[in-house]
Amino acid sequence: VGEWTRVEALGGALENRSVLIRGRAQAIRPVGKKMAFLVIRENGFTVQCLVQAQADTVSPQMVKFAAALSRESIVDVEGVVSIPSAPIKGATQQVEIQVRKLYCVSRAVPTLPINLEDAARSEVEIETALQAGEQLVRVNQDTRLNFRVLDVRTPANQGIFRIQSQVGNAFRQFLLSEGFCEIHTPKLIAGSSEGGAAVFRLDYKGQPACLAQSPQLHKQMSICGDFGRVFEIGPVFRAEDSYTHRHLCEFTGLDVEMEIKKHYFEVMDIVDRLFVAMFDSLNQNCKKDLEAVGSQYPFEPLKYLRTTLRLTYEEGIQMLKDVGVEIEPYGDLNTEAERKLGQLVSEKYGTEFYILHRYPLAVRPFYTMPCYDNPAYSNSFDVFIRGEEIISGAQRVHVPEFLEQRAAACGIDVKTISTYIDSFRYGAPPHGGFGVGLERVVMLFCGLNNIRKTSLFPRDPLRIAP
Ligand code: ATP
Ligand code: AMO
Image 1 (tube, rainbow, N blue to C red):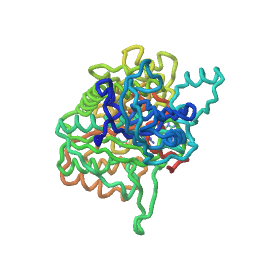
Image 2 (cartoon, rainbow, N blue to C red; image 1 turned 180 degrees about the vertical axis):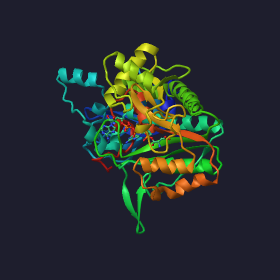
Image 3 (cartoon, helix red, strand yellow; image 1 turned 135 degrees about the vertical axis):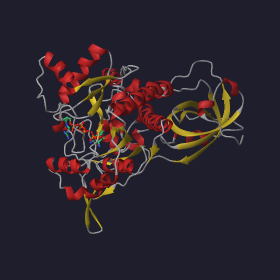
């Protein structure tokens, strides 16, 4: 033997060959005293292994040892590949390994806090099993998150985080190919960057400081530093004080900032092409992962157009008005109105991904550029998937005196952001950008109901462990 074989690679071509594999003991089924079946899992692929007592090779002690293994232990199995006479249920690979040697590399505790088979079932499968009188433990979200290292071993969860990885990859690849430079801005900063109260305050060697609520100020300052087009993938901290399905206290921000020549539409053009490319790449490169997610959490593939639909805020609230939903013309959309608009847009335009722009200035952060033709509105936008916000963006105010005035008008102590405002005093190009919530993109692309499912180790107002 000597060479390792991946479980994924096990097939009929290896018949009668000796192989060595390493994986987790997903299932252990003793049959009397002379035989035990093991299902070994590696990277989502599973193979059935037969440990059968034989005079010359396998001792009864070894069968006993196999039967006593605990689930999820990591084992090395050496054996000969055979093709079974009947199809194998409960394993992805249609060959069996006749075990010759078996080593336990790392033992799991005998009783796991989560039964992974149960944790991998869909709601429908759970209901069917319960009706059939099966002894099944429904795994609630808190339990899953408490034992996240086990929970993420399910096929759907493996899929979710591979999709998340591809979102980041598509984001980076697209922007690099468009001449953007990846930057890394500080997460320890002197004050709030979004003007809100939701900041984590801390003591920075005797000076008051906080965890960055976004890379907003520094990504703009990078534009003042002549980088032209920048992006960042990094942590964002928000001291959210309520417990919703789509807010985390720490999430991953995908941020973009760029010079613009004439119009904030140039920024929306990037959003459009970036996200169409990203969705295409998810559909092409993550088929298996999307299937794994969908088989536990069924969802319809996202409907999106080749050129992303853009509606103005006024058009959006008119659509809502037409069906009897009253929105304040200069107010914000609440979650319910956003969802309703998502539904109306999907029915009318056949897309679940769209941009709403020209928001009322009053509901946008201080750094947002008002519309030239009507300063009650702003050169800003939000982007929605299935009626929920994934992106906020805008053209920024690049005139320092006006920026100071806007900050003061929004109740911000200008002294706390003086270095930011000063950066605009040495010549600052017109610019704009946007921020995307990575966990929200994955949650909404996959039609999931809770952002905790798409954060590996979520941080919410009640959770800072594991
Ligand atoms: P962002 O922080 O980018 O603005 P968001 O999705 O939180 O993202 P908001 O504009 O803050 O968007 O809020 C939109 C709506 O979502 C609010 O009108 C409110 O109904 C709801 N909402 C926002 N934050 C919370 C929260 N912490 N708790 C409950 N509901 C919230
Ligand atoms: P905003 O505050 O809208 O904009 O945030 C940008 C995007 O980040 C995501 N997001 C969140 N995700 C999880 N949990 C949260 N608590 C949370 N809050 C926000 C959303 C949201 O659309 N500086 C601006 C962006 C810009 O204009 O460039 C900003 O931070 O997907």
